[in-house]
Length: 295
Image 1 (cartoon, rainbow, N blue to C red):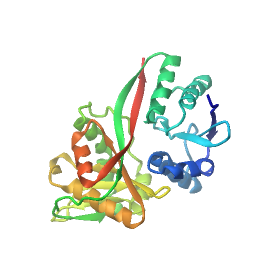
Image 2: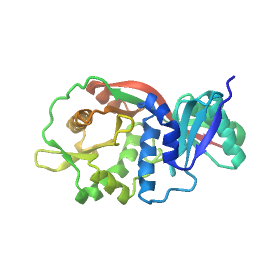
Image 3: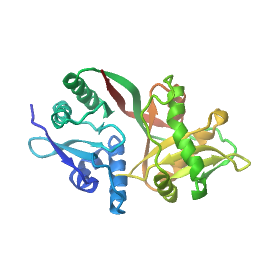
Image 4: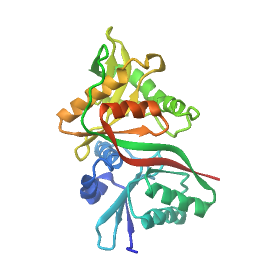
């Protein structure tokens, strides 16, 4: 078995220097870690402090080649990209030796599952799936049936509505997937972060024929040429009218016009969103999971 070594970085910019070529080699699969690393590095460059327990992981094989990566960006659980099974197990053992309590592991399968299983073995307990997700990339965009209204870039005056809809997104998604509201761990970005995203022009409303916001779609700035769409949120009273399909299609066109590949996540337990994105031309790339370790 080839030995794998774990290299932790406190600085996301140093991590990107070390792992950038590896992330760029498969930028769709690596989208979450790459985009969060770039966003966090930008915040650090602006003088914004980062949580002390954040880390960025580079996994190297015996030759020194990068063969995996991951991150812990508080308040979220660790997120693992594909890596050798021995590295995922070694990561769990490192946490245990440090006294670092980890009760959840997210990311690509089977690495996240291997790591969570070792956490459970060391600490006692069992692994449960909180959420099965699937990453999709847009192939040929298939325009949906037109809906009245238009895509509109969100302005700073809309930050309160954006915050409310970001906050409602995961709770409603849990309900649609048959889970209790609030079952999935999430945190709404703070007002300053939302304002940064709004100023970056990466949050849109779909407005109806009267100009009223009826839907929100956001996207991350491209990382290694890949832009990830999300969240995609329609208030309950506005659903079933074609707002989401039209908004995601139009945002995808804009992102592609910038030269970016487009991807997004779906919850495998939500058949409505999976059917919608399949009709638009999104194709599955990799399965991921949010795993929890329970006593």
